[in-house]
Length: 125
Image (cartoon, rainbow, N blue to C red; front, side, top):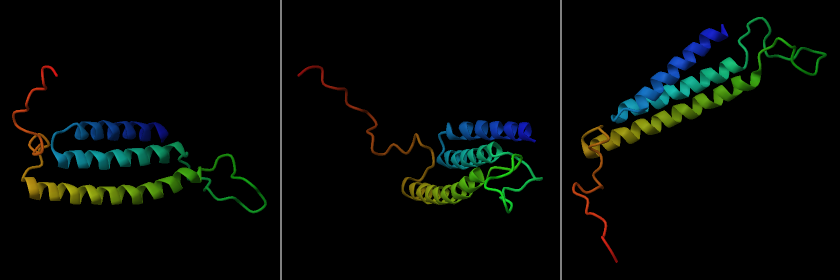
């Protein structure tokens, strides 16, 4: 099962990088969301995918059995889901406000603070 998830993580990373290299802010935002999901899936896969032995310490033992899944990546993923959702909500509001103010989601057209014809630097002092 792990090789299938490794291929899926690779596809997620590929799609995320492709979307983040776009010049439209909506695609960049979707790429960031897919990248967060790819990292979560990578962490989940690294913690072993077993259904037979749950990550619970039985009575009388001080540690997990040898074939149990690691609960630390699962706890990290739960935290990462909350953080990535709040980041996505912030980016959505930021993108919407930028679209309202500027009227486009093209990052090349969002350069309103830069002059159209930049003045050359001074030749000498």
